[in-house]
Image (cartoon, rainbow, N blue to C red; front, side):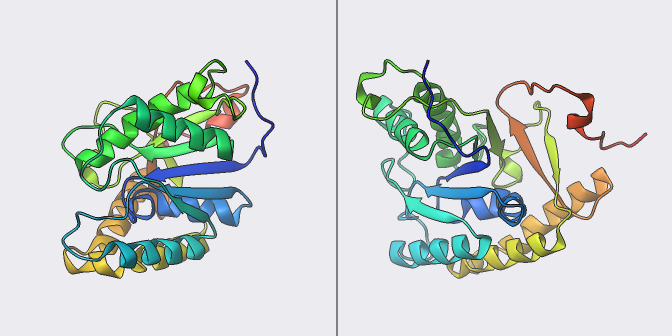
Length: 242
């Protein structure tokens, strides 16, 4: 299997709606860009079905938010807000994006049921698309070199997306500057603040997880596959700290 050469620090993050990535993993994104990681955001709708905010407004908010985080951004269509379906066409669209960006890591929502259906469907599409991206014989993708990522990480946009049965990796948001950027990036989605205090919700989630981990703020990631390491030192410490 051939793969494309890639910068070893490229992170590709998928979101179903214009604010999902920031709300679910924005602190991680800010921390990574400040550490020198190249981050590219892919938003798979323009929030067309939302009660508040027009697609044009939400696109502008997402672009502004991405600039705050130090990330690049693009929009693709998987059928429109609230119309995502698992299909080979959408899976190939995701796989093509992964081949084109050639990241080391990919982030996407969890596939847990009970949350916004677009989140769960996108989690499945990215999981399947990451696999197709590394298969060199897929006819529809042969114009781009096959690419294998190192790891697929799932994030929970809200509490409803947290998979209770999965073992999480808790990401310590030790950089206070990154937390400030994250808060600013979430606040950029002004149209969504009319329905719920989302910024406070996400910061509270991160604070509670941080307290459990013995740090200020943390966000959870759920690995799609077992993690392979060459040293126990790569695993960090346990949250319980015994």
